[in-house]
Length: 371
Image 1 (tube, rainbow, N blue to C red):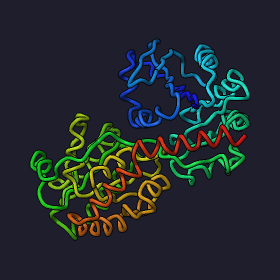
Image 2: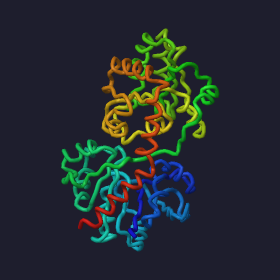
Image 3: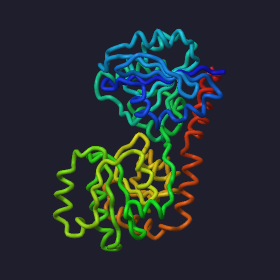
Image 4: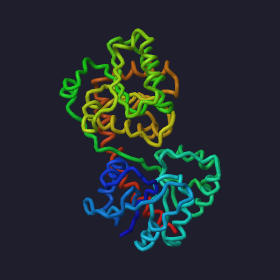
């Protein structure tokens, strides 16, 4: 039975209990409960706490460390070396020096896999260490293989055959009864659009607002609900809404909501919209699809992969408000049809923790036994 260590180098220094960090990483660690029957799996991560707990018969070990790029967590590496794992799965591409030193600790027989989390090639000395680290990395996991292109173009990853597709995360969110959810939240009609994300430039809320404004000319009964966890652009967005006569009564700035309430919002909505310019995967998109929302989203690599090249969603070019408006109209016409159920069934099967566990296991076996 393979022994795998799941390693997060980043230290949540403001977290002082295991529960905080486990909740933070629940979307990316949910597959562990489905792979543990096939392998020995241990999760190691960093926060302002040291200790060990067992959750559902899986050991979780915690260490303290700094986040400076040159700091090596010697204690963590010593612990991993003593475990003698066949594989260490490292989250993120931004710790190349640590990966180099990890390889020195675990030796030749241990394979190292890196999982991409939206990282981009570093424009600094870090890229040199990323190129060096590539010598010791046996596989790279991307939500979409398209995301490997800049890494290959910069010659940080030298062998395309080391790149694999695996969804970065899934969700525990489950669909609620639609009628109950709409009544609970006060949603009316069949043209309710939900936006979930941070109010920052990458999420591009202004493209969404402009496209929605054009859609109102086609469907004046539509409503846009914006759930957001951060408010970097909130002042500008309020100003934009206030200057457009059609938006104040149709755009609802919901703000942050309790996590236990989010399934009702996805279940009540008919359409999920996103203007994101870049995503490692798409947590909110995956949650929305699990609840049967029709996605109207940007045509970026991770979204194409998640929606099976647009089979289970409608894709528009980044910043193209005319396309967005037209696709909102198309999605509105499909609202209430079997398409919503098809999206949910696809998500439950192909965007699940079970599927991630299956794919990670197959890749780990391949990496260990091909050499």
